[in-house]
Length: 172
Image (cartoon, rainbow, N blue to C red; front, side, top):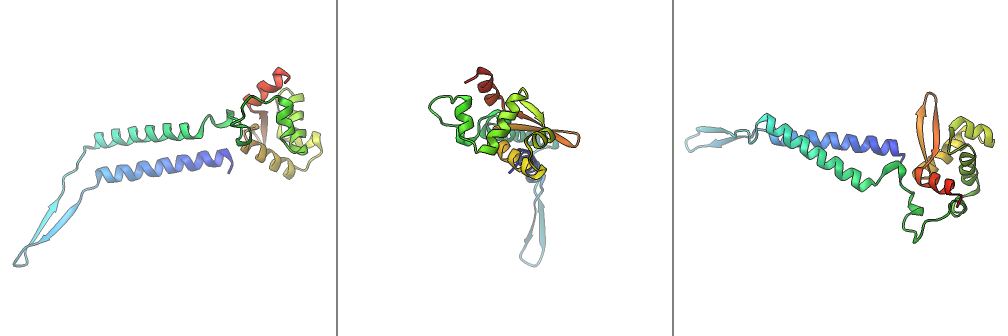
């Protein structure tokens, strides 16, 4: 799943949980008790919290949930991908490149030559890839934390992730 789709899904879940929490806090319960002789006694529970208290509890819960989501997600676009986490030492740029398949390696080397970033259309045009192939390769590299893409008009700006850019600038 793309990071942008994951972010949208997280925000939708956060919004839905806030609505559910608010509904639970503001909800009144009505209870009908049948008395002997057929009489009905209707009891409506009072609100447990005022509207202000409900909004405060919802906002605090949203902040806590969002903070937890950020902690669980790590640093997002600036963290190394799963195949690079847990290494006993920092790999050199060449070692990282050897972990990639040849086409992905070609893209990363191209980005290094371009100073760490380029437009997506430059990637496919310069490397002789179809638009679809370049897009799929970049999707994969983005999911693995190697590159970050930002929408720029009708294309994307592709840049090496900060951790890999630092490795490449050291020359390791």
